[in-house]
Image 1 (cartoon, rainbow, N blue to C red):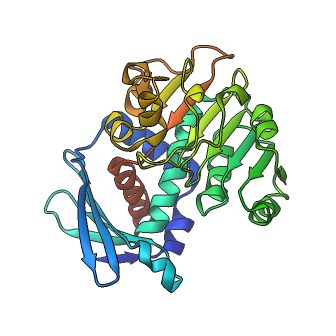
Image 2: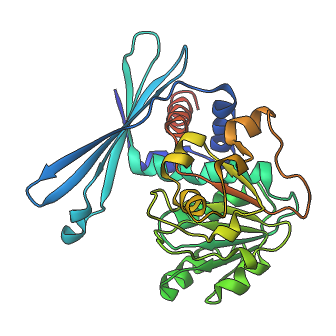
Length: 312
Protein backbone atom coordinates (compact mmCIF):
# COMPACT_ATOMS: atom_id res chain seq x y z
CA UNK A 1 0.00 0.00 0.00
CA UNK A 2 1.31 3.39 -0.98
CA UNK A 3 1.49 6.25 1.55
CA UNK A 4 0.70 9.58 -0.15
CA UNK A 5 1.73 12.76 1.69
CA UNK A 6 0.09 16.18 1.73
CA UNK A 7 2.88 17.46 -0.52
CA UNK A 8 2.17 14.73 -3.08
CA UNK A 9 -1.54 15.49 -2.97
CA UNK A 10 -0.91 19.20 -3.61
CA UNK A 11 1.51 18.43 -6.42
CA UNK A 12 -0.78 15.89 -8.05
CA UNK A 13 -4.23 17.51 -8.01
CA UNK A 14 -4.11 20.07 -10.82
CA UNK A 15 -7.27 22.18 -10.67
CA UNK A 16 -8.66 21.54 -14.18
CA UNK A 17 -8.23 17.76 -13.88
CA UNK A 18 -9.65 17.61 -10.35
CA UNK A 19 -12.65 19.77 -11.27
CA UNK A 20 -13.40 17.58 -14.29
CA UNK A 21 -13.00 14.42 -12.19
CA UNK A 22 -15.56 15.78 -9.72
CA UNK A 23 -17.92 16.66 -12.58
CA UNK A 24 -17.71 13.14 -14.00
CA UNK A 25 -18.22 11.51 -10.61
CA UNK A 26 -21.24 13.69 -9.77
CA UNK A 27 -22.79 12.86 -13.16
CA UNK A 28 -22.19 9.12 -12.86
CA UNK A 29 -22.83 8.82 -9.13
CA UNK A 30 -21.42 6.54 -6.44
CA UNK A 31 -22.79 4.63 -3.46
CA UNK A 32 -22.39 6.92 -0.45
CA UNK A 33 -24.02 5.92 2.86
CA UNK A 34 -24.54 8.59 5.55
CA UNK A 35 -21.37 9.33 7.43
CA UNK A 36 -20.78 7.61 10.76
CA UNK A 37 -20.46 9.98 13.71
CA UNK A 38 -18.95 8.71 16.95
CA UNK A 39 -18.45 10.69 20.14
CA UNK A 40 -15.27 9.75 22.00
CA UNK A 41 -14.80 10.74 25.61
CA UNK A 42 -11.11 11.44 26.24
CA UNK A 43 -9.41 12.37 29.54
CA UNK A 44 -9.18 16.03 28.45
CA UNK A 45 -12.62 16.38 26.85
CA UNK A 46 -14.92 15.04 24.17
CA UNK A 47 -13.65 14.27 20.69
CA UNK A 48 -15.39 13.03 17.56
CA UNK A 49 -14.56 10.36 14.99
CA UNK A 50 -16.16 10.66 11.55
CA UNK A 51 -16.15 7.80 9.04
CA UNK A 52 -17.19 8.63 5.46
CA UNK A 53 -17.40 5.65 3.07
CA UNK A 54 -18.15 5.69 -0.67
CA UNK A 55 -17.67 3.28 -3.55
CA UNK A 56 -18.20 3.06 -7.26
CA UNK A 57 -20.72 0.48 -8.47
CA UNK A 58 -17.99 -1.60 -10.11
CA UNK A 59 -14.80 0.23 -9.21
CA UNK A 60 -12.87 1.91 -6.43
CA UNK A 61 -13.81 1.77 -2.76
CA UNK A 62 -12.78 4.44 -0.27
CA UNK A 63 -13.28 5.80 3.22
CA UNK A 64 -12.19 8.95 4.97
CA UNK A 65 -11.52 8.86 8.70
CA UNK A 66 -11.49 12.20 10.49
CA UNK A 67 -10.72 12.88 14.15
CA UNK A 68 -11.99 16.16 15.61
CA UNK A 69 -10.21 17.16 18.83
CA UNK A 70 -11.22 20.73 19.80
CA UNK A 71 -8.90 20.50 22.83
CA UNK A 72 -5.88 20.36 20.49
CA UNK A 73 -5.86 24.17 20.50
CA UNK A 74 -4.35 23.97 24.00
CA UNK A 75 -1.42 22.03 22.54
CA UNK A 76 -1.00 24.23 19.49
CA UNK A 77 -2.18 21.44 17.16
CA UNK A 78 -4.89 21.43 14.45
CA UNK A 79 -8.31 20.44 15.74
CA UNK A 80 -8.99 18.23 12.73
CA UNK A 81 -6.83 15.47 11.29
CA UNK A 82 -7.58 12.55 9.05
CA UNK A 83 -6.62 10.14 6.32
CA UNK A 84 -8.19 8.52 3.30
CA UNK A 85 -7.98 4.81 2.46
CA UNK A 86 -8.45 3.92 -1.22
CA UNK A 87 -9.02 0.30 -2.30
CA UNK A 88 -9.40 -1.37 -5.66
CA UNK A 89 -12.89 -2.63 -6.43
CA UNK A 90 -12.43 -6.21 -7.64
CA UNK A 91 -10.95 -7.74 -4.50
CA UNK A 92 -11.09 -4.85 -1.99
CA UNK A 93 -7.32 -4.65 -1.69
CA UNK A 94 -6.02 -1.38 -0.17
CA UNK A 95 -4.08 0.72 -2.67
CA UNK A 96 -3.19 3.91 -0.84
CA UNK A 97 -3.35 5.83 2.41
CA UNK A 98 -3.68 9.52 1.55
CA UNK A 99 -3.28 12.62 3.72
CA UNK A 100 -6.88 13.50 4.56
CA UNK A 101 -6.50 17.21 5.28
CA UNK A 102 -4.86 18.06 1.95
CA UNK A 103 -7.32 15.92 0.02
CA UNK A 104 -10.33 17.52 1.74
CA UNK A 105 -9.13 21.09 1.26
CA UNK A 106 -8.47 20.70 -2.44
CA UNK A 107 -11.68 18.82 -3.25
CA UNK A 108 -13.67 21.44 -1.34
CA UNK A 109 -12.23 24.30 -3.38
CA UNK A 110 -12.65 22.28 -6.58
CA UNK A 111 -16.35 21.67 -5.82
CA UNK A 112 -16.87 25.42 -5.43
CA UNK A 113 -15.11 26.04 -8.73
CA UNK A 114 -17.17 23.33 -10.42
CA UNK A 115 -20.37 25.03 -9.26
CA UNK A 116 -19.04 28.41 -10.44
CA UNK A 117 -18.23 26.86 -13.82
CA UNK A 118 -21.89 25.89 -14.14
CA UNK A 119 -23.51 28.92 -12.48
CA UNK A 120 -21.33 32.05 -12.58
CA UNK A 121 -21.54 34.33 -15.61
CA UNK A 122 -18.93 33.38 -18.19
CA UNK A 123 -17.47 36.90 -18.14
CA UNK A 124 -16.93 36.93 -14.36
CA UNK A 125 -13.61 38.72 -13.81
CA UNK A 126 -13.68 39.81 -10.17
CA UNK A 127 -13.51 37.54 -7.12
CA UNK A 128 -13.94 38.37 -3.45
CA UNK A 129 -12.73 35.77 -0.95
CA UNK A 130 -14.17 36.16 2.55
CA UNK A 131 -11.92 34.40 5.05
CA UNK A 132 -8.17 33.90 5.39
CA UNK A 133 -7.85 30.25 6.43
CA UNK A 134 -6.11 27.45 4.54
CA UNK A 135 -8.97 27.19 2.04
CA UNK A 136 -8.76 30.83 0.98
CA UNK A 137 -5.77 30.59 -1.39
CA UNK A 138 -7.17 27.40 -2.90
CA UNK A 139 -10.47 29.13 -3.62
CA UNK A 140 -8.60 31.84 -5.52
CA UNK A 141 -6.70 29.28 -7.60
CA UNK A 142 -9.70 27.03 -8.23
CA UNK A 143 -12.06 29.82 -9.32
CA UNK A 144 -9.37 31.25 -11.57
CA UNK A 145 -9.19 27.86 -13.29
CA UNK A 146 -12.82 28.14 -14.48
CA UNK A 147 -13.42 31.87 -14.98
CA UNK A 148 -11.25 34.72 -16.39
CA UNK A 149 -10.46 36.19 -12.97
CA UNK A 150 -8.39 39.39 -13.13
CA UNK A 151 -9.31 41.17 -9.88
CA UNK A 152 -9.12 39.49 -6.45
CA UNK A 153 -10.08 41.06 -3.15
CA UNK A 154 -9.52 39.44 0.26
CA UNK A 155 -11.50 40.24 3.42
CA UNK A 156 -10.83 38.75 6.83
CA UNK A 157 -11.45 39.56 10.47
CA UNK A 158 -7.68 39.89 10.84
CA UNK A 159 -6.49 42.59 8.39
CA UNK A 160 -2.87 41.45 8.67
CA UNK A 161 -3.78 37.93 7.51
CA UNK A 162 -5.82 39.36 4.64
CA UNK A 163 -2.88 41.55 3.58
CA UNK A 164 -0.46 38.61 3.72
CA UNK A 165 -2.77 36.47 1.59
CA UNK A 166 -3.24 39.25 -0.95
CA UNK A 167 0.53 39.57 -1.25
CA UNK A 168 0.75 35.91 -2.32
CA UNK A 169 -1.30 36.62 -5.45
CA UNK A 170 -0.20 40.12 -6.37
CA UNK A 171 2.02 38.82 -9.18
CA UNK A 172 -0.90 36.97 -10.82
CA UNK A 173 -3.89 39.25 -10.22
CA UNK A 174 -4.88 42.77 -9.29
CA UNK A 175 -5.08 41.59 -5.68
CA UNK A 176 -5.68 43.68 -2.56
CA UNK A 177 -6.93 43.20 0.98
CA UNK A 178 -10.09 45.16 1.83
CA UNK A 179 -11.77 46.25 5.04
CA UNK A 180 -15.16 47.44 3.71
CA UNK A 181 -17.01 44.18 3.19
CA UNK A 182 -20.22 45.77 1.91
CA UNK A 183 -18.39 47.66 -0.84
CA UNK A 184 -16.33 44.61 -1.78
CA UNK A 185 -19.42 42.39 -2.10
CA UNK A 186 -21.22 44.94 -4.27
CA UNK A 187 -18.24 45.12 -6.67
CA UNK A 188 -17.55 41.37 -7.07
CA UNK A 189 -18.79 39.01 -9.77
CA UNK A 190 -18.07 35.99 -7.54
CA UNK A 191 -18.09 36.06 -3.73
CA UNK A 192 -16.58 32.98 -2.07
CA UNK A 193 -16.97 32.62 1.70
CA UNK A 194 -15.00 30.16 3.82
CA UNK A 195 -15.32 31.20 7.46
CA UNK A 196 -16.38 29.82 10.82
CA UNK A 197 -18.98 32.57 11.28
CA UNK A 198 -22.04 31.95 13.42
CA UNK A 199 -23.69 35.30 12.59
CA UNK A 200 -24.33 36.61 9.05
CA UNK A 201 -21.41 38.35 7.36
CA UNK A 202 -23.01 38.82 3.93
CA UNK A 203 -26.25 40.77 3.50
CA UNK A 204 -28.55 40.05 0.59
CA UNK A 205 -29.03 43.75 -0.11
CA UNK A 206 -25.32 44.00 -0.99
CA UNK A 207 -25.49 41.42 -3.80
CA UNK A 208 -25.62 42.85 -7.30
CA UNK A 209 -27.60 41.39 -10.25
CA UNK A 210 -25.59 38.76 -12.08
CA UNK A 211 -23.34 37.88 -9.15
CA UNK A 212 -22.58 34.39 -7.86
CA UNK A 213 -22.31 33.62 -4.13
CA UNK A 214 -20.28 30.58 -3.06
CA UNK A 215 -20.77 29.46 0.55
CA UNK A 216 -18.21 27.00 1.94
CA UNK A 217 -18.36 27.67 5.68
CA UNK A 218 -21.40 27.10 7.92
CA UNK A 219 -21.05 23.32 7.76
CA UNK A 220 -23.03 22.93 10.99
CA UNK A 221 -26.62 23.99 11.66
CA UNK A 222 -25.41 26.48 14.28
CA UNK A 223 -23.13 28.30 11.81
CA UNK A 224 -24.12 30.99 9.33
CA UNK A 225 -22.37 33.27 6.79
CA UNK A 226 -25.42 34.95 5.22
CA UNK A 227 -28.75 36.50 6.11
CA UNK A 228 -32.03 35.14 4.77
CA UNK A 229 -32.19 37.80 2.07
CA UNK A 230 -29.17 36.24 0.35
CA UNK A 231 -31.33 33.19 -0.35
CA UNK A 232 -34.83 34.64 -0.63
CA UNK A 233 -35.82 35.08 -4.26
CA UNK A 234 -32.40 34.05 -5.60
CA UNK A 235 -31.40 30.88 -7.45
CA UNK A 236 -30.01 28.54 -4.77
CA UNK A 237 -28.12 25.31 -5.51
CA UNK A 238 -26.44 22.78 -3.19
CA UNK A 239 -23.82 20.06 -3.45
CA UNK A 240 -26.27 17.42 -2.15
CA UNK A 241 -29.79 17.74 -0.77
CA UNK A 242 -28.98 15.38 2.10
CA UNK A 243 -25.97 17.39 3.21
CA UNK A 244 -27.70 20.73 2.84
CA UNK A 245 -30.81 19.73 4.79
CA UNK A 246 -28.75 18.02 7.46
CA UNK A 247 -25.94 20.46 8.09
CA UNK A 248 -26.07 23.71 6.07
CA UNK A 249 -26.60 26.42 8.66
CA UNK A 250 -27.28 29.15 6.10
CA UNK A 251 -30.18 27.20 4.62
CA UNK A 252 -31.57 25.68 7.82
CA UNK A 253 -31.59 29.00 9.68
CA UNK A 254 -33.14 30.84 6.71
CA UNK A 255 -35.89 28.20 6.70
CA UNK A 256 -36.40 28.67 10.45
CA UNK A 257 -36.65 32.43 9.87
CA UNK A 258 -39.32 31.93 7.21
CA UNK A 259 -37.15 33.48 4.49
CA UNK A 260 -36.65 30.26 2.52
CA UNK A 261 -38.01 26.73 2.10
CA UNK A 262 -36.63 23.41 0.94
CA UNK A 263 -38.89 23.67 -2.11
CA UNK A 264 -36.97 26.79 -3.15
CA UNK A 265 -33.78 24.80 -3.81
CA UNK A 266 -33.19 24.74 -7.59
CA UNK A 267 -30.98 21.64 -7.87
CA UNK A 268 -28.19 19.61 -6.35
CA UNK A 269 -24.92 19.46 -8.24
CA UNK A 270 -25.55 16.04 -9.83
CA UNK A 271 -28.86 17.23 -11.33
CA UNK A 272 -27.21 20.36 -12.64
CA UNK A 273 -24.32 18.48 -14.26
CA UNK A 274 -26.57 15.85 -15.84
CA UNK A 275 -28.80 18.57 -17.26
CA UNK A 276 -31.80 17.30 -15.32
CA UNK A 277 -32.45 20.80 -13.98
CA UNK A 278 -31.43 24.22 -15.33
CA UNK A 279 -28.74 26.46 -13.88
CA UNK A 280 -28.62 30.26 -14.08
CA UNK A 281 -31.77 31.52 -15.80
CA UNK A 282 -30.52 34.97 -16.86
CA UNK A 283 -27.49 37.24 -16.86
CA UNK A 284 -29.11 39.31 -14.10
CA UNK A 285 -29.99 36.41 -11.82
CA UNK A 286 -28.15 36.04 -8.52
CA UNK A 287 -26.96 32.46 -8.06
CA UNK A 288 -26.00 30.90 -4.72
CA UNK A 289 -24.13 27.63 -4.16
CA UNK A 290 -24.04 26.12 -0.67
CA UNK A 291 -21.74 23.17 0.02
CA UNK A 292 -21.09 21.13 3.14
CA UNK A 293 -18.98 18.43 1.48
CA UNK A 294 -19.77 14.91 0.35
CA UNK A 295 -17.93 11.60 0.48
CA UNK A 296 -18.36 11.38 -3.31
CA UNK A 297 -15.94 14.31 -3.61
CA UNK A 298 -13.33 12.63 -1.43
CA UNK A 299 -13.51 9.43 -3.46
CA UNK A 300 -13.20 11.33 -6.74
CA UNK A 301 -10.18 13.28 -5.49
CA UNK A 302 -8.51 10.13 -4.14
CA UNK A 303 -8.97 8.36 -7.48
CA UNK A 304 -7.48 11.36 -9.29
CA UNK A 305 -4.45 11.32 -6.98
CA UNK A 306 -3.94 7.57 -7.38
CA UNK A 307 -4.34 7.41 -11.13
CA UNK A 308 -2.14 10.45 -11.70
CA UNK A 309 0.66 9.04 -9.56
CA UNK A 310 0.39 5.54 -11.00
CA UNK A 311 -0.10 6.40 -14.65
CA UNK A 312 1.18 9.98 -14.97
